[in-house]
Length: 235
Image (cartoon, rainbow, N blue to C red; front, side, top):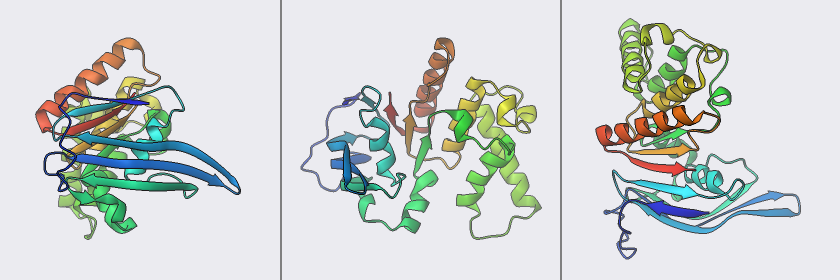
């Protein structure tokens, strides 16, 4: 596994993280199953500046996705994570689960692999995106008619932003009624719902044909330029 960055390396002596949005120092991940220990990630370090893109590149099974998911502690309990992760100078490794839950979605958005399995097949697009918005914007209040209308309007805006045609129709669709490219765009909309400053894209073009792959990558680049977010791209 290797990293490719489109910005110059930050000075590792600047401990505050002021010149970088994401910083990882000596990250290691082991999976423990009884007496069996499997080393998935071995001492990775990286820096990602605000508004820039960094790609983790490697063969299947080399630990790329594990590295990305460990940033927000999204791995199963069998995973032992060591090392330090900083987000805009904040030490994520020291946060409680409740504190991390606020970081997920609000500060960091994630596009998972395989949109068909990442989306709930029983829920319409409107509900799936709306729940992400409500979780962070209205988590401590009851949703009334005005809040629900605001969430619906925001959901439509997100669908338009990610290039989904006829959003008023697609908002009522179930995942199986969408094409692969449309499902991926819905996942991107969910990841961007709360305007994160870092987007983790875990192989966002997996299982898509070449033409759609190019469209999705171009979309991510245009959204980055528009929103000024950093992107950690797993490929």
